[in-house]
Amino acid sequence: MNSRKIVFYLSNLLFYLVAFIGISLIWGIDLNDFSVFLSSILAILGIGFVAQWSILSNLTASVILFFNHPLRLGDRIRVMDKDFDWTGKVEDISGF
Image (cartoon, rainbow, N blue to C red; front, side, top):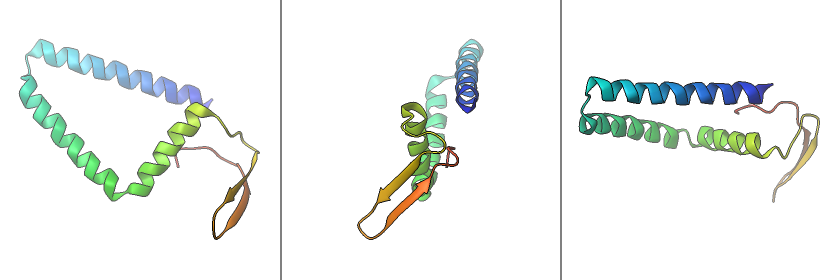
């Protein structure tokens, strides 16, 4: 059920992005000015994500888990670390 919501949300986001680009081309917005604005926004987002590196890694891992589906709810997993050996049960798969 959550997979459908995410795919629906991403398809709506793509639709609105294409509509925004189409409207901006119709209104005659200068692409050079828009590219400077967009690169500034992306730079600010990049700095914010680097400052919150753990959040970025969690979001990346959730995208990989969403499309790869190696785990299901109720599976038992074991994380073998050099210092610690953790075992647990998958109770929730979300963005974090």
